[in-house]
Length: 154
Ligand SMILES: [Cu+2]
Image (cartoon, rainbow, N blue to C red; front, side, top):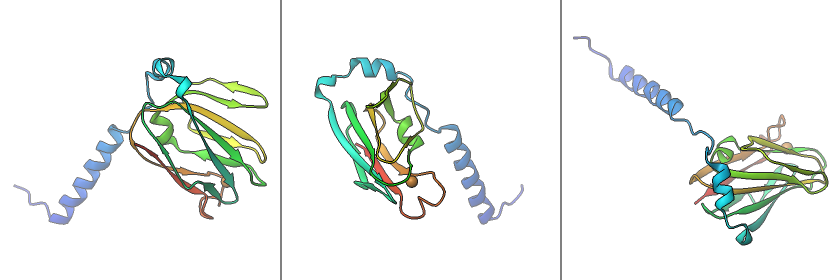
């Protein structure tokens, strides 16, 4: 029998865990459109998040599963910023993203939204998967300067 050193065993465990997490990585909500249609949008709750150099306000956004939301993503900064949170977008049933000046975009899911300075986008959605998700701006240097936040679905 081959003896495997303890350290190597630990390494193998980590490798297996990484493989498992890779295999079970969260996919998008497949029944998003039926969840959106079944939602009671007359009870929609509206929240806002402000983007600026280099922060999200509030720095923690909390949502409840099953509740329809409109999240107003407002860029009050002087440069463009991103609302990027792939795992959060995988945990919600998206209805649409609306630009109040230009129209609305209907898609089963998004992974990132870019908002120009002085503009805003409204994300209409119903949270599905509980969890804590990292939100960040993917423009070079912004996250390092503090442009990150947490989204909690409870
Ligand atoms: Cu930014």
